[in-house]
Amino acid sequence: MDNKKTVAIVFIVLMVATGIAEDIFQINRDVVWAIIMAAFGIYLFFQGFVSLNRKRLIQNIPTSKISALALGLVEVIGRALRITPKPLKSPYAKADCVFYHYKVEQFVRTQRNAYWQVISEGSSGLPFYVDDKTGKVLVDPNEAKINLETRYISSSPDKKQSIVNPLMVSTRNMKYSESYIMPNENVYVLGTAKKTRDYVTEHQEKIEKRISDWMKNPEKIKEFDATNTGWLDDVEYFNMRQKVVVTVNQEEQEEKQVQVKTDLSGLADVMIGKGEEEKILIISNKSEKEIISNLRGKTFLLIYGGAFLTLAMIIYLFTKQGGK
Amino acid sequence: MSAGLIVFLVITGFLVVGLIGYFITIYNGLVRLRRNLKRNWSNIDVLLKQRHDELPKLVSVCEGYMKYERETLEKITSLRSTYLGARTVGEKSRVEGELAGALKTLFAVVEKYPDLKADQRFAQLQERISFLENQIADRRELYNESVNIYNIRINQIPDKFVASSCNFTVEELLKVAEAERKDVKIQFNFPK
Image (cartoon, rainbow over all chains, first blue to last red; front, side, top):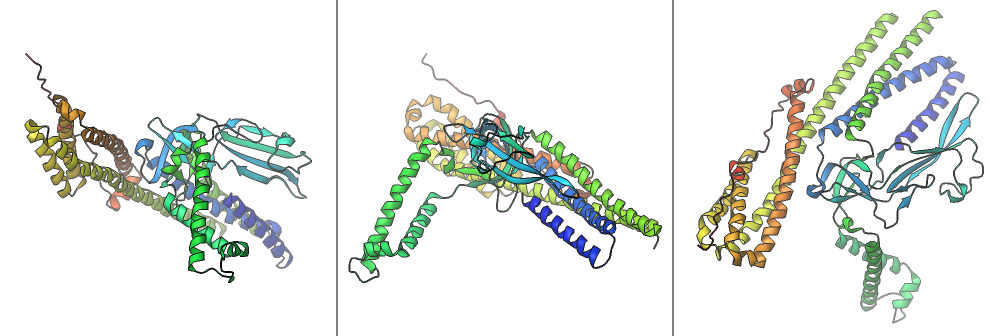
């Protein structure tokens, strides 16, 4: 998603630069575009190496057994299981799933060109388990590079149940696509195995934050200010702290009861997600072989295509200049 | 400057940058592989340390019951000390193999000591050590898989050129020690 935004920003900047070059410097629009395309070719060329790096990373990491999972960058393959007692429903296809990713696009036509513009995109965001028969581990799909096949495309969603844009009136020129992981489907995950947040630290932080909030709240100060001085002395502060501890403990007890209902037992230990050091998280319902094969093709296209595009633009520029 | 020369320079430029990029990708990949090997070994080492911490307790529990198995218990204690002094992966792996074999023997002859078998402390220790053994086995498998990928990589063209010029050498797989392969000799003392 970030890459797409960057490309969009670069595109807008280039459009503006083209206009400036055309108006102020009286440079031919085609020449400016040829230079831009040559630069874009160089960008694609380097992106090819990023893709090559990713392909080699997947090839070089052996698959871990979940029962003996160690912290750090890991690759696991297994069945996807939901953490909620009831199945998760995808927003448009209404399919039972453990994870979904949707995209809403609108067809935009301008004077010069026409394209599909993404107007809304999102995913379920809920973690899910991966079970490889030796054990199960929780996977946090947030910020993951999702490599799932699109299983639903439609131009007319069920508007009544749409969670994307309830105010959307017209569905003309719209495209709703969805990809999802079904329960018990085999998934490939490459990410960083890390300890879920330490309960004691989390508990302590929660108490400190609550005290800080209450100290800023005049009503709470008044509640514990037994001497009516407008501020809390040591004894009054101690009483407030005790009250905070009791309140937080009660809240956590309630949360725990909810957690037991949603079977979050795996949360206590290890979770696979995007790492601090290794910023890679791939979730796919394709096999490892398929993923590598796709990346091989992409790498080839980017490196050779990028180089060819630049070369073609340079040849074009010289032929154009020579022709003048 | 002629158009032909410019095109030639651009192609040469792409080739040079491409080759440098490819070299860097291969080199970084090999560095990552080697680092993964070390990490995978360290992950085994962590479990071995946990298992070694349980051994003195196990020996202490068994001592009271297994008066006639002194040799096995002494072997376990001695191998544990040898392991702590081992430095290389190969050395550690060899001692570990022998230790695993000695433990296998110990757990097998326990059948001859019903009192020990019924001891709750022993049952807990046996369960804990068996759990760790299973995890060690899984991690050894992962380590060997990493070694295998690494060894294949550094012997494949074009990685071979980068590996030989940057001193990436072949790593040894963890092998099952002779002691672990041997059948455990169990003598039953049936009443005649």
